[in-house]
Length: 182
Ligand code: FEO
Image (cartoon, rainbow, N blue to C red; front, side, top):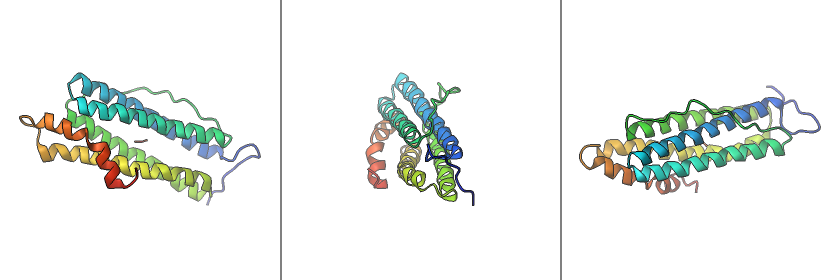
């Protein structure tokens, strides 16, 4: 078991600071990606999906800022990430939400890895801090998985896509209720 290396001026190890800065990058990428998706949806007339994703982009920025404040309060230095490679166009509305689901699963894996590391190094403050993210990821995966399911349940033919967009607009409330987080 590795012991965390700290100095008298900081309560966060350098290793944990690096991991949390990587998570900042991931949350920043989430925010930028969802903003881009929201814009594409709006440009295609999917108003409900656009609203959902605009809100989601704001939430992800909030997640990023939570980590900024945590790192700095613990004596570290949070870094504004360089974000590039954002996808701007999509083949379909379904592809947007399939991308959201894939992305959220990768964020959950990243959070889980940092939680694992915090336990291995007995960094219980970071472990405790990350529990909010563990719960949040559960809710976000529920939302994204349900979004993808809705395409199969309703079907995209005829007025299907319009109905799907309406249902996607209700997903925030659904995920909060099912997960019990909010
Ligand atoms: Fe904050 Fe959806 O990851």
